[in-house]
Length: 396
Image (cartoon, rainbow, N blue to C red; front, side, top):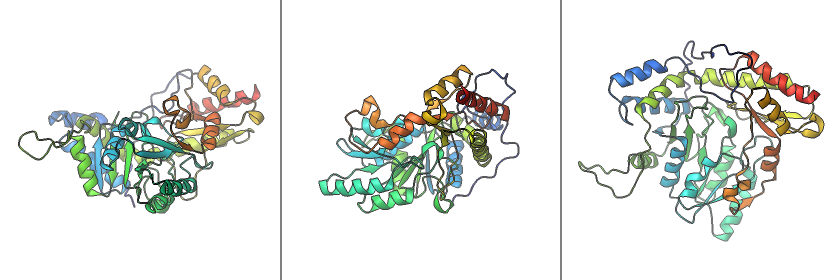
């Protein structure tokens, strides 16, 4: 089980007071208060590159939070996924399976490596990969003699997928699982395990819109020392341990800079408080909109605890009176950023020819789903402003 870092006193600092008409963003970065000091210490020590004490300390801190024994800090979450695909042996012509409802980065590196994505539908309750459908499709693939090289479930919007069921289905056929936990830092699943724990590999992001941000960066984590050592070598241009530059293959410049690692180190102690704040934001949205017909929210399974990175509203236009786009436009006119739920990848032009299994659930969620401002720096007045604009749509 992960050992959470203690929340630093005063770690959550509210944004300066904004005029009521100031734009309200979806998930802006939120400083914890110690970033400048961490960066100053790193600069004074002369470290800039992906080397030195800060990246190693950040990796150790991530390991403490996630309970994973091996962690590699990377230049981005996408870089972590790319390294994961590489060390799991993805080659041109392989299939990589992922849920239809996710961000393109979940599969983009594999596609760029020459693999073919296959998109599976999601469950209606948690919006994550359907384990039952996965098991059925794996059995069919085994009969065809074409199993996927990797299955990549996603912890969508900070809610854990049913990883135990997914791993069990894949283990039957010897297919490795790499969990895209980019938005799930601080979320937990069965037994209190951290998001991604139990997969062969898990990828995280520290992009500017995440709960814990370094302004960029990511991490690849797991328990397989051999896989993570190979990923570390590839992240450093695949240099061999010789005094000169020796390369048996090619790699990447994927290490995390010392400066970004220093920012991440200042942010991680605030994780527990930030998850609590995001969950409070979600609860206020539910309470403030509960009496309106035709509105709902992404459900949380009993066996998990989401970090509620983003609150996603479901709009049923018939009882509510307008559709998701009507709400989005009203919020935009009121200076509030919102965004439709992920457009399923099987509906994206880039993947028009990709194979799929199901997809109706993901498509329906896209048509009805709207991500609402969920930043940890939101005030109650900010949130009341959003709620009032949504309620006005119902009265229109």
